[in-house]
Amino acid sequence: MNKKILVTGGAGYIGSHTVAQLCEDGYDVVILDNLSTSCEESVVRLRKITGKEIPLYKVDIRDTDNVRKVLREEKIEAIIHFAAYSLVGESMTNPLKYYENNLYGTKQLLEAMTEEKVDKIVFSSTAATYGEPKSIPILETDETNPTNTYGETKLSMEKMFKWTANAHGLRYVSLRYFNACGAHESGLIGEAHNPETHLIPIILQAAAGVRESISVYGTDYPTRDGTCVRDYIHVYDLAKAHVAAVKYLIDGGKSDIFNLGTEIGSTVKEVIDAAKKITGKAIKVVYGERRAGDPAVLTASNKKAREVLGWKPEKTMEDIISSAWKWHSNNPHGYKK
Ligand code: UFG
Image (cartoon, rainbow, N blue to C red; front, side, top):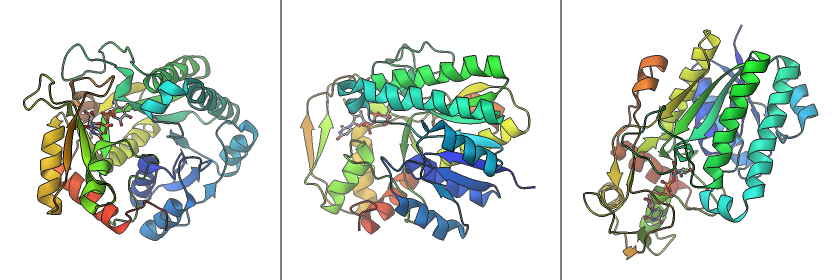
């Protein structure tokens, strides 16, 4: 029998790419999404990409009764949990919105899981759980000291899994992503935040003429060219890691936490230069002040994920930019017509 996986937030950016990969690897997939920060069009396109039905339940994770109903009726084997708010800036101006959805929502989901005896969950976490790193590359055993509400809620969610797993015998894998980017090779699904705050989409919007310029936040960091270094990881590699983590749990793996990054750091200037080369477009760059809360360097150690999950990132910065460019040039306004 095929294993059926429920993906919460499956209409969103990383969720939709993971759904595509699960389908490709032969899993049956059900999406549960309240579409508050995503839209149905991504699911319509997923059906086109995969040739599969992919049921979409427009249900909020806080609605335990309906979540229970879906778990029961669809006979769900495991959950991949993406549904959450994820804007760092917004989490600082409206922290309770993040506690309500990310923490209370996860608590409700766990309640439904324990009631319906679904005992495996893969969780979308973040490098923001670490805060300002004391050493680079960051290891899973490093201190966690988030510097924003978003990271704090994700860390608290990890802890909620830990204690619930202890009490109720469920198993979880938490995946801490570094900088997610890139798009599906079809050009049909990709990154579409509103408002957009992430570096690569903003650079490509400037290349496409949708935005006038890109502002570089700070040129006086202690890095090779003065701009921040980040570990950019292709959403395809993230999707593969989620599928590997589900398989690991189904095969009896124990609860654990893994970094997902490439171990390669790129500066903001290097990403802009790569985008100029790949798009062949002029990109207007404005050099500005530092953005509050940005650490100089964030790169992952991915040794543990390679060793335990048998996963390794395959895509390069070139793959990231060219796939994202295909998506942005085909869909300059995201999923909006
Ligand atoms: N940057 C600019 N100009 C912009 C946007 C970003 O110079 O217009 C710079 C930032 O200062 C940073 C880098 O580009 O140095 C990447 O910035 P992003 O906003 O794209 O990503 P962050 O590194 O700030 O955030 C990412 C994820 C968060 C996560 C965080 C920590 O998007 O969800 O990593 O892991 F919390």
